[in-house]
Image (cartoon, rainbow over all chains, first blue to last red; front, top):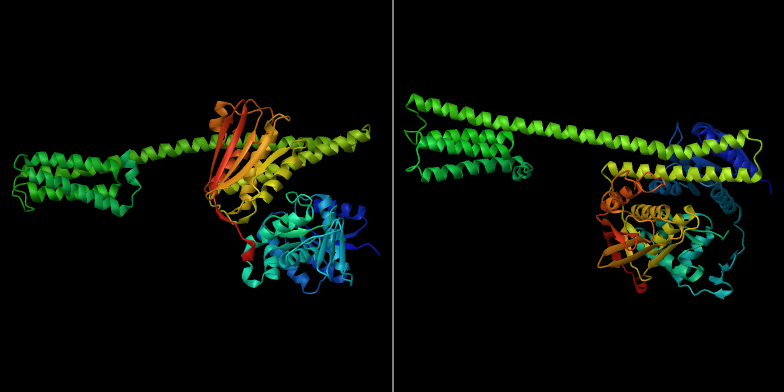
Length: 228
Length: 358
């Protein structure tokens, strides 16, 4: 499989330079656009495998760019933002961003997000068992094993965990999870989510207080990752 | 002093108050009018207006002056119960009375204005002083890591005698300095949010165990080698609060403890919740603040003079600002022999969900 081509849309030359070096030395092909206009044209002329989109572009609001892209572009988009504004992040995720990173971010973090976003886009085959180090999930049998021991999960716990696992590496927002698991009437009942996440952690994490699989994205949602 | 308190009352109340006082005093004088000459009554009323001038705004005082002049004329100056004045002397007295009462009101008002202006000047002088402290502290706090970064990159670019080990050390310095800069920017943003005065907590249900472990993990990562002891009840209820704010409060308290104490001293955080009051204690056993520090520790840009470790001194004022924004309190206690203990108390709504409900 050839390496994915990544389009960087960011107006800051320093950030573009750093990203280009990081991507190219890690085996990706990269192209850069300095404005929303240029970025949209480049994406349309030659659709890349993934787009890194800065929210604070000079010529157009990043949210608008994202909406325009999402009318036809189906590959992953990762948002880069200087503000740790949770509402901004949630809005971007609702508008179809696959993930976000707030500047300044660590390189390792960036590469991990890119890897999992690209994996999302590729694997959609018929395999129903998923393996993560000491955890195995059988989606057909609705079972989860930890260290080859069956984990006893209630139906709601299983639904929540399997939804996060199917979206491995991707952040799912509180509202999305509440709507998907409990229904549209429950999107403000965030305490349910807190309780169930804590409960699942007790069952699948080695140390529930220092989770390695089920991570909290403060103010935004939760993310299931495979242990590094 | 009472007068200044009264000044904060709305205009309507002040008018009512001045009318009531004048009528009350006139009433007493009227009752005693057999024993008092009407000229003495004028002095008593004038005295009353002067007292009102000290306490009230100018318009209610002018009203009192006019009203008392009228009352004096109508009820006291012969012929009584008419507005007519017979003798020329009484006419002069009445006019004089009215003018003096007015002058009284206006002068007192002017004195108060002058006081206000000098108070403003003093405040401005203080804020200039604060501004200078901020600049001093900022230029130090931002330039130190910048100097490290510039120095290290120059070396990496131009010095051809660096060993691999040297290079790694320089790169580590750059990384450390940039993280420190980032933390400074974060603190400055928080302070400007607090200074702007209108931050409201955005409350949501928060798992305290998760929050505390998350903050501790970050503090330990940024202060390699430090271990923080956590004591939190496993049956802690969910708390309804602004997680981002509490995060900053705890991070700054713990990071402060990690920076300012010897590396072998213990740092601990304990969290409990009783009757909807969330209590958080951050304790350390080393370094400690002296008595002078304890008073000023929450002031902006205050920095203990004994400490060599340079930090902007913004951390604890952020702690105080955010805690108070959440309607909570924070106190510093000294713990024997030379440790210190910060106690944060925040009133919260709590929730213990039973699984049967969901």
